[in-house]
Image 1 (spheres, rainbow, N blue to C red):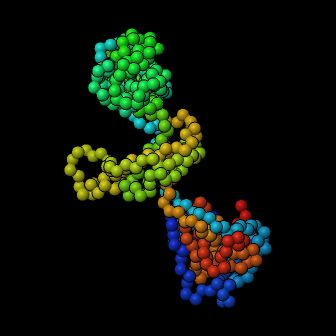
Image 2 (cartoon, one colour):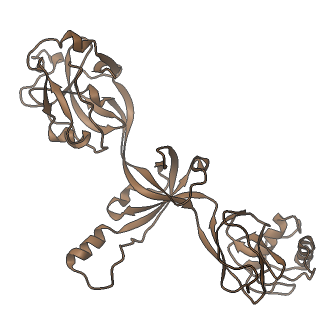
Image 3 (tube, helix red, strand yellow):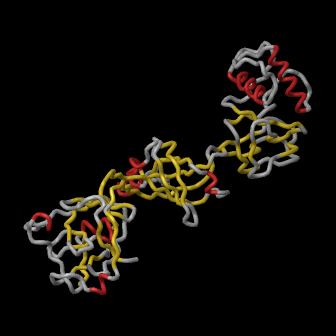
Length: 394
């Protein structure tokens, strides 16, 4: 085998192996070995291989029977036929950011006296903002404090949110996890108010605490210190690092909840992630509102996308990047427990089809399967795990 065999680039497409041509035989079945040619002539591989390995790939043929020239033999190495899993992927663009988006609105004429800096992370009990010189802490929960709470108020989910947060902050260790505002709840509230330096009333009013689902990150300050606390004061996000992908509807089968993915970051580094949410509503590109042609409508349908969210396995890998463009590799096919060789080990035969060459110079015909990770799936009589075959020396 000549050392001039070009390396075949890989595109991740799945290509069935070409059929053996009529009359071809395998050297192990007693028939005539496949023909190879000595003098190097570059010929284009059949379209099935090119589709998998990339347009423009070429394989070296030899024009006479006999061993390859000695100079070429010294520039080859050997590799092993291995049993492995081949994973084919398709790459889709995405955006790195933070999970969740929330807006904090003021609720009165009191003056804004403090706002956090952009990029600040707030956890339970932290000061979220201040109005009239009074700090408003962050609580976790799914129901805001929407009414005045005191002994005798009807039970409700807002009471449960209040009691859980008081207990987590060290006030009212004996509070029951229920929706009833008891005298014990009022005592815990007074203890909390004392800790904050507020008047100890035992009553909680709307706006005394900001309720969000969990820790938050300040993405924008919209209020103005010294102005009334009206309108939007803050824009927040969650703290979990996520990648959002606008997946073309035609490829939505790639996004399976719980599936592992690889994320390519700016600079060429990678990290791993997992699909945590797959949207169900398609988003079509915006139009100017006029009735378009059938072709325009067809284009909009083809360009429709669904939102796919990917959580990162190692969030520290992305550092402080926010809003950065990334790419995500989704698994399109997986071939498990197959025999494979590096793509450069393939030889195109003069009579058609492909082979690998043993260190002794014997050609063994192979059928091709999946291309992935720089390897190709091979099968055929005489192809065994652990078999040594030639490859061009790097």
